[in-house]
Length: 288
Image (cartoon, rainbow, N blue to C red; front, side, top):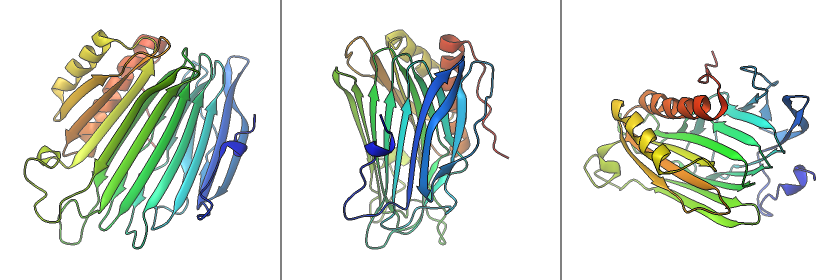
């Protein structure tokens, strides 16, 4: 099956960047057996951060930012038994988008027993930015997904936060032959005037999210992750999805005023899962 064939850009828009990656297990190690990139997206050479066989790829955007009417398309498949950690070289910056929003479309597919950790750097939305992110995920009932994300407002000349126009992030998760597991919609549309009081993100400026899908997800795990967040300067909630074909998911969402605090919180949660499920050490994704 060709991963490039699964990419379906808008007829009216030529993608600024396209990336396709197929990772498979070969002799106890996960390797990319197919790669494709065009335009302003590519990946760096693979890294192995431990002896688990998990491969780490870093996505790079040489253009440095998303602008108005930009479309980026990413297609990733993790084949049976393979393990992939996918991260980014730096933050995704959304600058002014006059006339039309910037958009990223991502499609993820996980085969039997596959593992995917998606840990990008934060999304930063600057003044007059409008951004849409659509992520479609299909999992085998025996696969495992851990996906984290942080959203933060960018610097404004007048020093005020929330000068972006709108952020729409939609994540659709389906189980192979089992139907819809979850549809997560996050819409942030700052009001025109007062953006500091309660009622708009409860007075916080940053949003962190963690999505976990695995057969081992249960209420006890959700409770443990929630307790783990108590020591952080953030307001956090955890929700469980329904069970589809024996697999269940959870969504952790956290509000804070600090990117670093949210990264520590999400990192602690991911470290717990890595240690318990895979017997591996916490990630060290320092890129400088």
